[in-house]
Structure formats: C-alpha cells, structure tokens
Image (tube, rainbow, N blue to C red; front, top):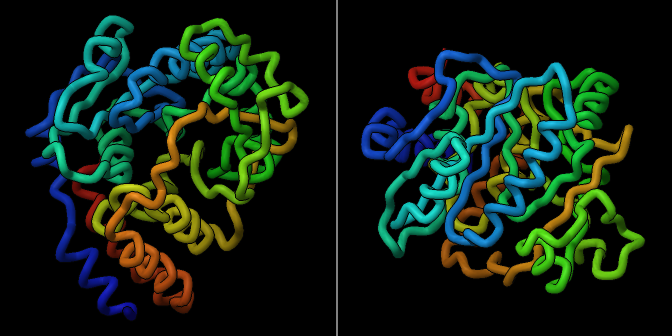
Length: 301
C-alpha cells in the first residue's frame, strides 16, 4: 500500500456524521454550556464495568475545583444496554445502533462523542475498563501545565496497571478502595506489554480537529487505531505525546478476556498503520489535511 491508496481508502469510506447522529439516540445535558473537558467513554457490552468506572470518575470530578467536566457515554451496539444507567445518573448518552455482527467501531464512537456530546475546550478519550483515582484530574492538570502540552496520555510510562479477577470483582461490587491501589498491592501487576498508545488521552479540541479526529474510515474491532492516532499527533506536534509522570498518574485496568486477536481484518488494519508510519512528513501531512477537511463540516462550534 502507498500514499494514494491510503488517501483513496479514507476518502471512499468517509463518514457522514450528520446522518449517523440523525439515526442515533441522544440524551444530552447542559447543551448550552461549554465545559473544560468532555470525558468520552466508548462502550459496547461490559455493562458490569459501567458503574465502577463512573463512580471512580465522580470521585475524581468532585475532588477537583475550577475545572468543569462532562461525562459522555457513546454506545456502538445492536442494543442500548447502557441507556438506563446513563438516564438514571444524568450522563450524556449517545447510542449508535449497528447490526449484531458488526465489529465495534471505537473510532466512530469517540468522534461522535467529541462532535455531538456537548461543547468542550478539550476531550479525554477513556476506556471503560480503566479505573481512575480521586486525584486524577488534579494530577492531570498539573501534568498539562508542566509539559505545556495540548495533548497527553493520562497515565505514567505508557502502561496501565492490571487488576486480577478478585480485585476486579471487588471493583464491580464497589467494595474496592481505588485510592489505595498501587503496584505494591497483591493482585495489581504490570501489563505483559509496556507501551500502550491509548487507554486514556487528553487532547485539546483544536488539535483534535487539526488531525481530523480518530479514523473510523480505516479501523474497527480491536486494531491499532490508537497507535495511528498517536502517529498523527506526532506528525502535528513534532514530538511523541507526553505521559502523565510529573506527578505520576496510575490507572487500573479491570480484568477481562483478551479480544485483540478476534479481528479477522487485523492484518489489513496493521498495514494501514505501517503504511502511515513509513510515509514522508509531507505525505503524512496530506493525510491530516484530508482528515481535517472530512471532519470540519461537523465540528461543534
């Protein structure tokens, strides 16, 4: 694959976000207000993780002052499993219906959350299975100020910490004190692979729009969509995305079955990522320009 084929693929599979949102179910709160952060959580299934994740978010939001944050759940699924929980807790909710056999399109969910989940100066794209501690937003704000960056991975060292089955069950039952978790606690471990490019990313709205958001034209299912997003940011900023290590932030990944190898198109999607990585700087910029152009008509100003 080369630049022209990648450009053609993106252009021919471009997303009509207005049509997507017209065919979706949206329940949004405080639409007239602009928030500092829209905390976007893409979901499909794993409903047992919804309450512990949201509770950990609320504890962190309640502890920070001077920062307004809205929580947005975007469900890409054949059923609206998360709708009632979101309604009961007055959480921004968008349901993008799909066929049962369609692969989860995390990129589409995150872009829809950013475009239609309410006005915000910046976004955090956060995985449902990653719990945060109550000082998360306080520490994140300090990291952003110290790095003077408009994008940052919201945890230290490009690695999350993993909870075993028992700690995950305790989290689901809300009998786990997340603030007491650390790598020194039994049942908490490092991941097998260090270097995760996704999981939780803070990015200012202007940069998100400049790189054209995430890439549902290329990726769905379990794929290197976060790595591709990371490379686009590196092209735009000229440097690797910083991580939240001053002060250090840990987030805690709940235990579930590994699904990375369940994507029948994984080799094709890896090829998109490797092709982009191997392009010249000017060629990468042409991809960013196309993505920005495709997104701009739907941007929420």
